[in-house]
Image 1 (tube, rainbow, N blue to C red):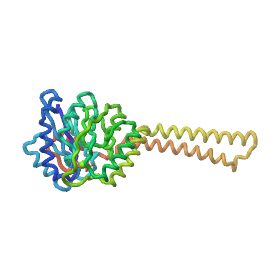
Image 2: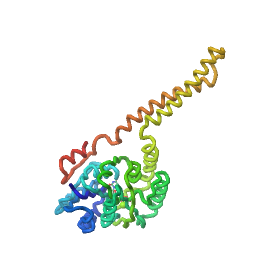
Image 3: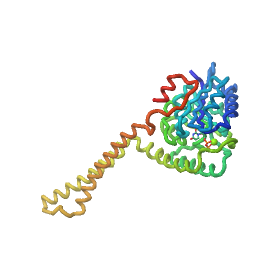
Length: 328
Ligand code: UDP
Ligand code: MG
C-alpha cells in the first residue's frame, strides 16, 4: 500500500510547474515526513490537469523523467478545482492523502507537520494561511467567506479554503465532491462525523501566472454556500422535508373542507362562495404539490450533478483499474 498520495489540481500553471515539482519532491524526501510512516515509505504524486490550454500536461510528461512516482490525469476541458480534486481522490491509494496547489503559494515543507497531525488521530488537518500573501481583492472576500462559514456551520476554523490539507484514508474515501464544494470540505467532513482541525502554514505570493479565482467565482460560490448550508444539512432527505409540509398542508385543507361540508349538509349553510372554501381547496392542492416536489427532489438527490465520468484527454503512469474508476 502507498503511504502517501499527494494530489495537485492545476489549471494553466506551466510556468510554476518545474520549480513546484522540484520543491515538492525535495519535501517528500524529508526524514521528518518519512518518520510519520512505518518503513518502507512510498508515495505518489497525482497531478490533475484541469483542462489546461498552456501545455501544462505535456510539460508534466517531461517532468516525469526520473520521477516514477509522478502520475497524470488530464481533463479534456476545465471542470473547476473541485472536480480536479475529486478525480484525484478517486485515483489516490495512499494511507494518508495531501492536497496542495501547484502555483507555489502553498509550501511543500508544511506537508510533514500536517501529516504528523493526522497521525495524532485527526481525519482532516487543514492549513491556516495566518499571514496571507494575496491582494486585498482576495483577502477581504475570503475573510467574509470564512466568517460566514464559521457562523453558519458552527465550526471554529480560521481558514476553510486553504489548498494545503491532509486527509485520513477513511475521509479521502468518504468525500463526495462536486460543483464548487471544495471550499466547504472541513464543513462536510465534520458533519459526517470526522475529526477536523487546522494548523498555521506559510503562504507565499503568486510568483507566476494569475489567480483563477476572481470575484465572479466568489459570487458563484455563494450559491454553493446556500446549497451546502441548507440543502446538504437539512434537505438530505427531500421527501421528509416536503413530505411534512405536504402532510401539514393536506391536513388543514382537509379539516377546512370537512367543516364546510358539515355546515352545508347539517346547518344548511351554502358552501358556494365562502373564502374559507377556497383556502381549503388551496391547501389540499398545495399538499399534493409539496408531495410531488419532494418526490422529484428525492429522485434528483440520488444522482450527482456529474453525468458519468470526466472527459479525460490522457493519463500517464496510472494502473488500468484506476483509469476505469475515473471513467465510471
Ligand atoms: N485550479 C484548477 N482548476 C480551476 C482553477 C484553479 O485546478 O478551474 C487550480 C490552480 O491551478 C491552483 C489551485 O487550483 O493550483 C488554486 O487556484 P488559484 O491559485 O487560482 O486560487 P487562489 O490561490 O488565487 O485562491
Ligand atoms: Mg493560488
